[in-house]
Image 1 (spheres, rainbow, N blue to C red):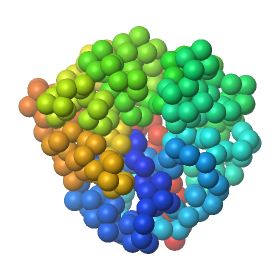
Image 2 (image 1 turned 45 degrees about the vertical axis):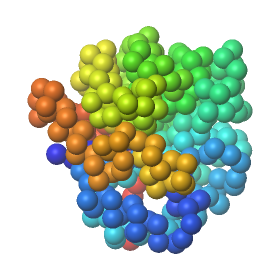
Image 3 (image 1 turned 135 degrees about the vertical axis):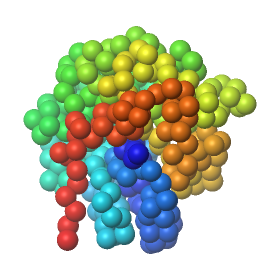
Amino acid sequence: MKVFDIHSDLLYDLFRGKGDNRFKDIHVKQYNNSVIKGAVWTLYSPDDFDLKEAVNCALKKIDWNELKDFKVILGFEGLRNLEKPEDIRYFYNLGFRHAMLTWNEENKYATGVSGPKESGLKEEGKKLLDIMIELDMIIDTAHLNKKSFYDVLEYTNHNIVYSHGLVYDICDHRRNLDKEQMLALKKANGLFGLTLAKKFVSRKEEERDLEHFLDHVDFAIEVMGIDNVCFGFDFMDYLDDDFENAMVKEVPDATKAHLILEGMKKRGYSKEDIKKVAWDNFYNRYGNKLYKRSK
């Protein structure tokens, strides 16, 4: 059984991380000892920097020969550093097929969860969405505040995902989706990627574990159905020390992802249903957007 992780900050780590061998020493080592055999690798934008420079820096540090038969889609976690909507074409031509309009901030395109509640999708954001729709890119609604989330879904239902979050009805973290949002996502035939970030699992430290994460899996499947749920783990173990213990305790990094599949099996999920959530729901839709590796 293999897993497609629809949210990883790997590109950002290669851009900001110290040392030129991080790809081989950290990421390849983990993936080669993991059930994760596909991922959306994103460039995360928590602050201001030159986006073209950052992308080129990260891509140069990838040795594709180190990963055998690993499926990759390139994407962006936030576009605060995209100077104008038309610039997304430059990155599309580099192989990018996925983007979120914001991280937590309000920018020229939309409003994230840290922005004003009354502020939503901007006119520049609509122009950007139009180009993404034209290019058949994946539109990721994670990190948007509620108004922007609903504004995007009202504007389009084209290739919609919410790549990494959990269930607000279980844990009231601002980045989790409530049942109403989940139903709206389902109506758009979007995919809900479930994260292992422990603060999204529970407000109580003693409940930030695999079993309580699986409660979110159960709830999401109950509301959205087995065909609209997947995994967007957002592993943070390889980032700086502030994120060292950011994941549920049993699954601190990619090498332990198999425990989730085993947990689902123990809860009575069939092999077919586990395979849908782990791989098929995302890959069967978006496997045509894989990065074409240069030889």
